[in-house]
Length: 482
Ligand code: GLN
View 1 (cartoon, protein in one colour):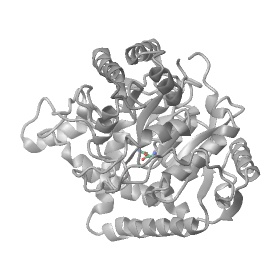
View 2 (tube, protein in one colour):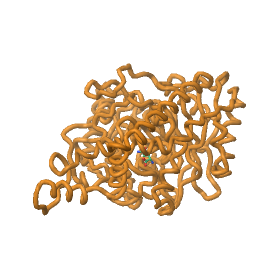
View 3 (cartoon, rainbow, N blue to C red):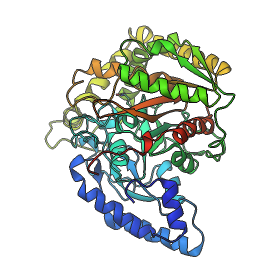
View 4 (cartoon, rainbow, N blue to C red):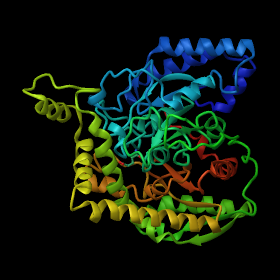
């Protein structure tokens, strides 16, 4: 059962070959057996089994959806009523939310069963899951390697077969990079399509909920029950959800797929480049036309992203003042001292760094030079993508310059930030974007490839991904020992 896909499990549940309770117990015992990789921050078997029993009841009554009884784990950025919601920060240690995030609520309404909450970088800030206040997550492929971040708990848990599917969030690559580092498929939808209500905010104009699973097909099955209009969220797009599986078997014949050739520079690991060339060749052989494109402004993505994201983070994190939510220092002299100490003791180094950068770029005298300038370049990047999608159906590119790196290898924040060069452009433009497995490096670590499509073209993108996964078996490879 361990590496079963959502579609396989759905068939087993429908045929009554397994019950939701049996499935939940099976995954809970695997989670327990693999505690050492540290992907779960909160597991409450009694709550999971309660949901599983409800799912079995729905199945028996005939009111089940095709996803009722499928286990799922949630990144600890989504607030949940029954499990603590911490954003992997000391600031929110033990915090119990009075409500479920909209994404969690919708998935639950479809009957998916929550396995628990997943570790991540503190407030989703990072690329290696080394910034969690609750310890690092190990990459199931190699315990010296990072699982990627910030959704490292989500990627490691799917890669290790501890859940068939997991939610994650992507602000500048936090779904795609960890998916690529662990050999799973990860999708970030169009900004605004899944609701941000109940997602602990990092950078509000970028934060997007998404999914990680073994296959594009599984994501296509679940995405429809995760997205949809939320009237209490001003950034939620008011459009109906759709059948994201409708284009799965359309194939790529007649499509135009763009390759930003300048992204295949000498900084790209040659084995990663070669693996991506094979995907491109496969699409060509299936009848797609491959065209070179240029995205010169996208190369400015990293500085633009770190100005915008830090500015928004500094504003969002100002709510953690020791008064309204979260940690409060034990000893203080007056209210100023209380706020100062609470923030100093509650936040880790990376959120502090970003609050400082963000406060700086928003301050009088620097706002025009940094923040406003970044917003202008962001618009140019977005327009450049819009122009590209007049000519191509999808863009194929690397996700990162190499495979998962070793723990500690990017301890210097600037080197970590520069690693986001291929993922942040689509985030700045709010585009749907995904990573899927396309090889295993001679170092034994998985290789991913990135697909980007125009806004709201998730179904098309999933079809393109499925065409690759029908022709390859990298998504069926799993780490040893799990
Ligand atoms: N690595 C990026 C950062 O540190 C992206 C994080 C994210 O997408 N949440 O900001």
